[in-house]
Length: 269
Ligand SMILES: *[C@@H]1O[C@H](CO)[C@@H](O)[C@H](O)[C@H]1NC(C)=O
Ligand SMILES: *[C@@H]1O[C@H](CO)[C@@H](O)[C@H](O)[C@H]1NC(C)=O
Picture (spheres, protein in one colour):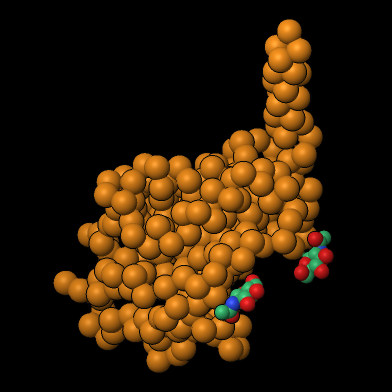
């Protein structure tokens, strides 16, 4: 009898805890935007004076890349990604999961200028589309130059074989998920040394255009480099990348934006 009662009350506590997590703890204070409803992408520009670029900007991201409309530019050099291993932290930003790197992660050279890799984060499904096709996941590797310019390398993934890079942070993603709502307001979790070199795979073919950050404040003059090669990750891995997020944030993809006369360049015939 006593055992039965104890079990019952443990179940009640577990249920209460679950309700608490769902209804109250994850109130996402401080994040003003979302991906659906009254804080969705259509309204970003009016949610804060800092977000006006999201509606006023003419050169926004993501875009739909039409392969036949992209222009071959023989002057585009292969992306020189000089990556190493970096000490990292993993953080739940409410609207995405990001891996932040210390200054040793490495650099990419774009048009002769060096940009340091600062953080990686993931969107699901993909934000950029190719010939109208959307993919399961999109990785953004965000780099900054010393004078504050931004270049992003994007990799598109379809469901398939497991991605070996993600094995390195599997445990940390699970830890973040277990922390539940606490993670959203907590400090980044130390995630140790992560080898960035595997991310260079597929760098020889890419699309290039100038756009913006795909989330508020939608800052423009971002140089985009989107790998032409579609990579694979397992469904489980794609799920693990979104699992710590709540509700509609698990679908964190901004709709594609008008080109307004921009051209997409391509570095191969
Ligand atoms: C706008 O951004 C600045 C700089 O990040 C910040 O200090 C300020 O509080 C922001 N304003 C609003 C209304 O969010
Ligand atoms: C990595 O960063 C953590 C803090 O996030 C720190 O405690 C640790 O000493 C660092 N490790 C190395 C090898 O620098």
